[in-house]
Image 1 (cartoon, rainbow, N blue to C red):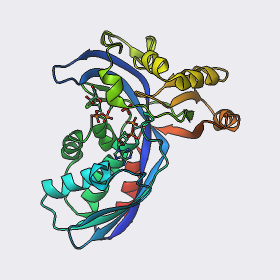
Image 2: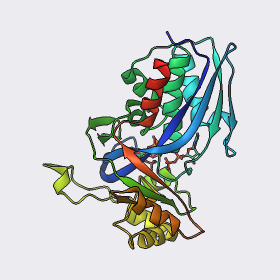
Image 3: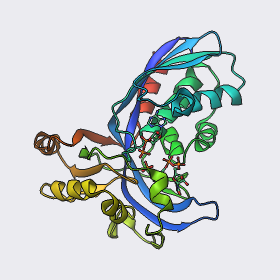
Image 4: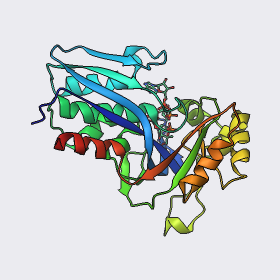
Length: 285
Ligand SMILES: C[C@@](CO)(OP(=O)(O)O)[C@H](O)COP(=O)(O)OP(=O)(O)OC[C@H]1O[C@@H](n2ccc(N)nc2=O)[C@H](O)[C@@H]1O
Ligand SMILES: Nc1ncnc2c1ncn2[C@@H]1O[C@H](COP(=O)(O)OP(=O)(O)O)[C@@H](O)[C@H]1O
């Protein structure tokens, strides 16, 4: 039984190293194949147990109403599902750009479920938490499971794999892209055949990239600018773009030269989500 009453937990960024869209289901969701990796960089959440059932969020709420915040939705879902008679005071330090394709909202939700499952001693398994998380967003289960993976289905069927660690420079071109807008657009490419054979021998792209480049010229500019350094890609439905390197210095060099109109960060990839690594250390204390 976990007996401490407060701790902090990271909500890491993800990158989609490729994203193929294989079709559209009758409910509007898309069948995907996408490679998720986690970064050692993210939002910071602080959780403090309350003896009443109130759930509050302070810090960088960025104008999102309490009941719309995925952190609140996650906390309420777990509280209701497990009939918990405690609450939580949650503080958010936001570092991940919103609507940037690095999964900040989904990661915040997943870290909230992981943290409160510990703080409230609800003892749900990762499978049970992932099933709950899927109600909040297609990306939440991968953050709950916390292992780099190729996702199938709508993003919830996970095939785990180890990836060699790399350094990334991730650039946010100061434009937010709505996932729903991209997935409802008539021009989105939706007919990429499913992967067969060794995926590492195939051409792996992001099917959202051509459409987002057309809709957001700043994304096109960012991808072009990054090409000076390495092959550039967009993550998820955008708008963040990234380049991959073997060493930190190479990633740092790109960041040092970034035009002032954009924002960026560098981070290394990890096969296990840093939220899981941190939580294991907290529980062991
Ligand atoms: C595309 C991806 C790839 O990682 O990333 P983002 O760019 O958003 O981070 C995700 O699958 C996004 O996951 P998430 O952001 O949790 O999606 P949801 O909240 O469930 O859905 C947002 C919108 O996208 C659509 N959607 C989402 C996932 C999917 N496989 N098909 C869809 O058509 C939904 O219909 C909804 O209108
Ligand atoms: N805690 C949160 N952090 C970020 N976005 C949130 C949060 N709660 C709700 N949202 C909503 O979810 C939308 C998508 O956010 P985010 O996950 O950052 O984008 P993406 O899926 O492109 O990475 C935001 O535009 C915002 O309206």
